[in-house]
Image 1 (cartoon, rainbow, N blue to C red):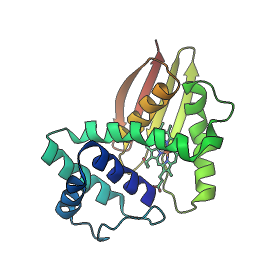
Image 2 (image 1 turned 90 degrees about the vertical axis):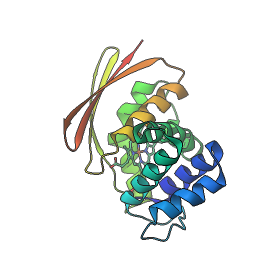
Image 3 (image 1 turned 30 degrees about the vertical axis):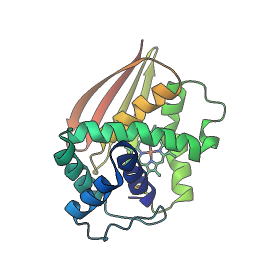
Image 4 (image 1 turned 120 degrees about the vertical axis):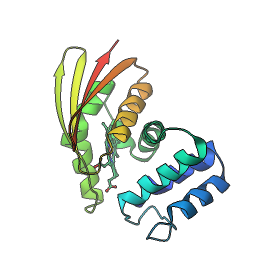
Length: 176
Ligand code: HEM
């Protein structure tokens, strides 16, 4: 997984908790890479999962909630870092529908070693169905990004999720 995801996660931990918490969870996770993450590096996604578990133990916040909050944080980072992906897009459904066919393919051009999920999207009126497929099991991150996107466009949405199999989760996003 790209180093940017790790550095942004640790930035969020520092902002929300403290720099000591950052040191603590890196120590506890004892990552193979050594834990000196840089945005240009590539690291095993399991190291992120291990740090989330360590943070969860120390804060008594469920890992799912931590990853979801991180997804919302990451969406704000993407908006700052990649303004071109937002040009001419004025609502969350248009944006979310472009992740599979436009945004992630562009990400892959920038970072050929990126490991990205697949999304199948279907839109029917006020409901967008996004089915997430990935062996990395970051559906909580996907949900956080979806909520971050709705927040960004100032929209109220309800997200229902259903696990289809080990690697797939269906999100039903309804605008209210
Ligand atoms: C400007 C918008 C976006 C950018 C620039 C972006 C870029 C990226 C990047 C760089 C990664 C890391 C790849 C790696 O570590 O190898 C990633 C992963 C991921 N992205 Fe996006 N993304 C965007 C929007 C979204 C949205 C809106 C969603 C959800 C609907 C999403 C879902 C995910 C998930 C779940 C992963 C984790 C990898 C996995 O599950 O297999 N992304 N994205």
